[in-house]
Amino acid sequence: MIVSLVVLGFWIVQAGAAPPDLQQVRNALRSNDIVRAERLLGEIVSRHPRSAEAHHLLGAIRLAQGRYEEAESALRKALGSNPRLAVAYLALADVYEAQNRRDQEQAILAEGLKKAGPHPTVLFRLGVLEAENGELRAALSRFKSIPEKAAPPGYWEAVGKTHVSLGNYTEAETAYRRVLRAAPGSVGILRILSGIALKRGDKQAAWDYIAEARRAAPQSPDVLFQFAQVSLVNYFTAEAVTSMRLVVLMEPDNPEYVLALGNALMDNQDYREAVPVFTKYLELKPGDAGGELMLGEALRGSGQDEQARVHLEKAIAINPGVAEPYYHLGMLAFTAAEDQRAEQLFMETLNRKADHGPACLALGRLHLRRREPQKAVEWLEKARAFVASDPNVPFQLSRAYAALGEKAKAQQALAVYARLNAEREKRDQQRLQTKYTSKRQAE
Image (cartoon, rainbow, N blue to C red; front, side, top):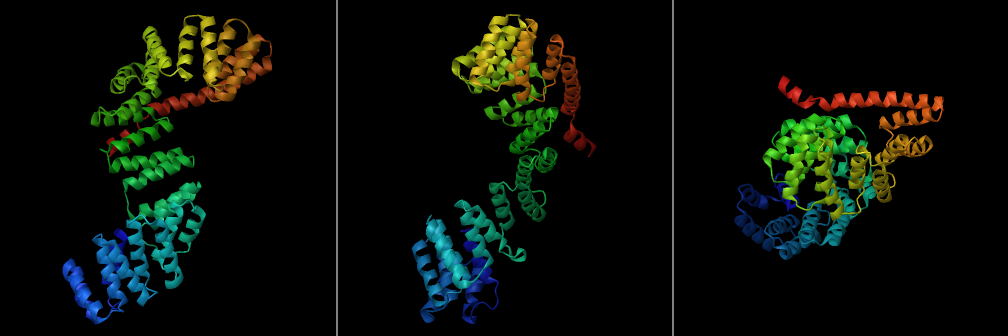
């Protein structure tokens, strides 16, 4: 429908596109007097039955009114009189699109390309259809055949979307930046650009885009939510917490947002504050295994071990196939020096998730406590493969190798620990940053 109206508008402004007897039709359309325009066109086609322009306009008007059979008939007559009238192919494609006749839509556009030549909008529409059909490279080739100066509305966005589907994230970002240039401050495009930047691994650029979107739409829950998620990726956990608090104030009964606030608080190590948030989540979604797990984790993190155990066991009762509750129950047992029970729970964890690095680390620590350094090394080396960034793994490895008398390996592990610990301290500093908030206050 939108395309047909664009086509209609295109025809109206073409001063020399039709014979003089269509001038009254132009005037009626400019004043939005559709009834008069249709009556005049009926009179014209009665006098000039081969007027392609008149049949085309009559078809476009009937399309806008939802009179699809009459529109198709008029447009077919237009093309019968002038097979090179590109706008008639486009309007006929609109008829088929409105009726969900996708094969015929594509066929008439291909026919238009063949008979009317490489009209930019025909090429564009064909490319969009090819992309929707999964013919992504063909679509991209079609888009590239359109001269940039003649590119129709939506061109760069379609190019960007196709590049995203192909995994060409740098090219996609370039295309969407062209869209942003034409619509500065567009929140939707900034959000898309943030997602693309994440996909190509540029976390800072992703944050910059979404921060700009937040400045443009500071009261949008969707933008604040995305801002929080990108902040977490950048270790700006305090920013994420602030943003999610605003979202939950706006939509206090949205379980997705309440859960996200709880997760942000956990990442910010605000375990006590997370407890009432996850409690609220379970009020909104009672019996949710993930909610029981997160509440159990928050209670454990805040030192409320007995209550944590209750909720972790509930999580297992609801979904016994998930590994994480077993791990946290194992850590409760480990803290209580119930080594046999802890070992059993860590093994249950690994039975459900063989690459669970924290469980391997915990088993290594357990064997160190039992003074079994060789077994400790075996588990800790597994842990290193799964959680390579955790400084506690090389620290425990250094202890295990030292107990075995392997000083060189112990020193190597300590060097790795020093590097990873410095990186963690840097992340902890980032975690407390309020980069966006500080900038807004300065403004």
